[in-house]
Length: 314
Image (cartoon, rainbow, N blue to C red):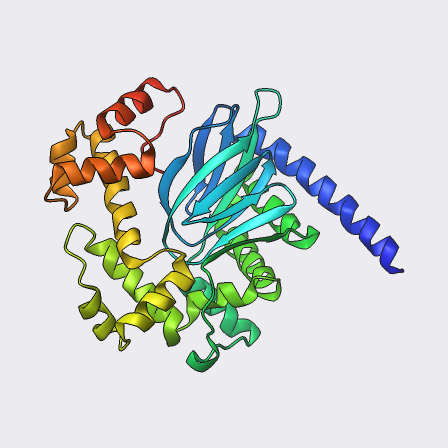
């Protein structure tokens, strides 16, 4: 079989897999929203384009069956569709927006949460190792071409929605295959950072975890850099290389997203929410909130409540 024949066969397999994935997600998610049929597997449907959603993405692998989506991290934009997948390998405060969706052709997507320990296990099984010295710094998010083998594993995983009795046996096997194929693919080195126990990427992962845990406390960059064994300039450089934003911007986004959640789900006032997420000056909070979400906090929350498609989190 020559290269032309292989390409044609790959294209046919991709089309068949996309058609089946569309049909199965439509059957599983019959109204707009997100379901989690099994732990770590999310299926989503939207019959119209949605307002930009701000949330923290945990490590995950995302495939779109129909439609398209744009994800923003700092000044970087990542758009993906049925031909491309998204991989996130670190907790990141992202803004996302469904770009293509209609009642006739709804946006349909699949998301698999990635457990670092499970990734490490698969790496060990196939003989992949990453030493701290070889762990180059890489942005913790990117989009790549989806191939037929990877899509086939996704489809088989979604089939289990109709056969829940098979989940305990088959789901771990299929997730292991997905991770294996990701490791062997274009983003393999990025995924391997989830399992690295040393080097600057792992240090930044620890910094992200610390900032997330103590987001409402003052951020002392010098102290955090020292604890990680890095100079302040080196810490700033590596943090931005991995997350695309500075540590202070990272904390700001976490605070504002949590304040928005508090106002939406707990009916907190803007001033109360500001204090609870670590702001000492409500006026400063209002300015930063408007700079991220476009309008003042209470007006934003009012619009979200009036919008039928609004959600407070991911």
